[in-house]
Length: 172
Image (cartoon, rainbow, N blue to C red; front, side, top):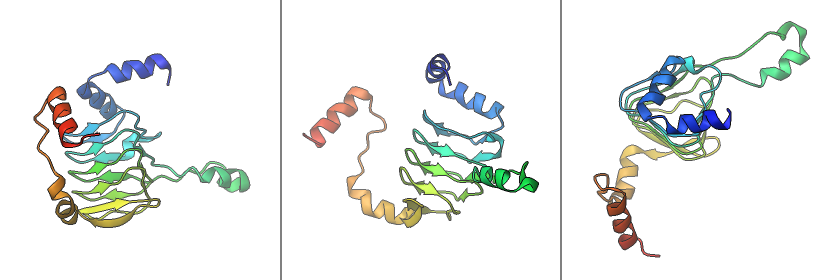
């Protein structure tokens, strides 16, 4: 991607970005947020995002197995092969920064994928996964229980209000 193309993309509104991704065949539900630096690979039409899915910066979703490159050159009868797998992410999921979702994976509803995780297997509903490869580390209910005392109500605040709150609550 050229510098101009990259800059133009970053300046585009969120709705326009989603519209362009849909035009490439990506299925995107309602209420989704896709932050910058993502990569849907060469087959975005094999990716389905449910409603209220958030992809943090740098999320990569791949729908093909690049390893067949070796087979194509090793076995003449496989010179034209590919291997694909649809990727589906259920409703109300958060995929953390720089996570990678591999071909053929289905992530259930109400899931959290930790930052930099590599998801190689299906993830059941209501599960938190993390690591390389990603493994279940808890449930959504356990995540809430563990962190409930740390939750703060700041989503309604503007930038400066939130900054003042955070600087008071988390002093240097």
